[in-house]
Length: 425
Image (cartoon, rainbow, N blue to C red; front, side):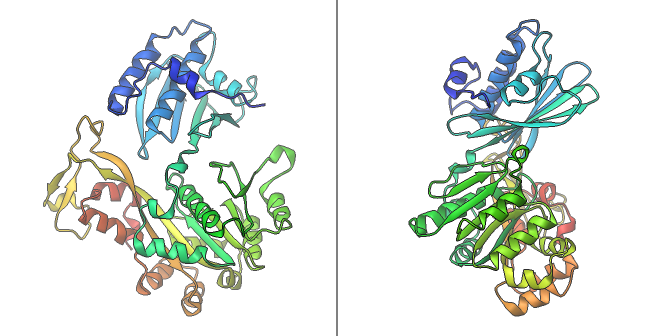
């Protein structure tokens, strides 16, 4: 049984600032001071430390917290707007260990520190749960906390920030009764947020007249009107078993949290050929690479041609703060075809980073056109696929990111940080 941590209790105990007018820098400063006041020799040290970290993470809306053991203690970092930021280095605890406390809360084996472990902490409220992962390292166990449930803030497709063309393509795809739509991108690119928005749209427009089912690992956000299931490997309920059984539940729309291997991919594609609309995610850096990788996994081209109707690839770019400055210096363009751009400066409001919030950049490859699908699936080379797709009218991720730079929304250095340089080709 996973122990539940009650956010109101955390708010009563936390000493970090919770007022919206306070800057992230102020909250971080006050948290650091509070953590340093705790005595590492106290039996309550680990409990107090974890409560403060969880409350701070909830307040600032972080996606991940990293606790890295060092020779001197525990180095703590948190991810904000997609970038890891340093919080400080603190004692691990003489009597009570911080990592051990996390393992207790997430129902992990406290007496095993030599193997990786994964568990969850239930947090009622805005943050549905925290995924806890531990990993043995040179100086002890490393812990990573990942926070789920905040996707509920972006409830509808129109809230996500995709272009009108991409948003309409998503609406058109969701209107289909069969076929697969795949959302691609690296971890932290907003894939799950997009999928959940799609599920909400389906639940809203169907009015309960379509059977909507999911199989996830884990369930990140509960969606009213959708039957959601979570993988439980120790009980024998893995993704393959769950997907095969789910197909006997008379679903009309199926969402699979992630395609991770050839078997899952094959079952998913076969399922959408039998009259279901399939939504899923896949780790690939572009729509073209997704096609290439699926072919390399052994999925027959005719299955992709018949089954996949659209592929969305997306990234999250940090949005420039109002303190950004306009530059016409070509050295700041990072090779982008622009005549001027805004560059980050940094102020108290943005915690001196120069950025505040994030914006999505995306591309959508439609495979509904049989001639285009044939042309794309006749090659496994991702560069050739990308060329064919862009020549057919698809706005690429790089093209969209460049437009966001021209519009002053983000900076060239941020585009280069997220997309690299190879995608330009």
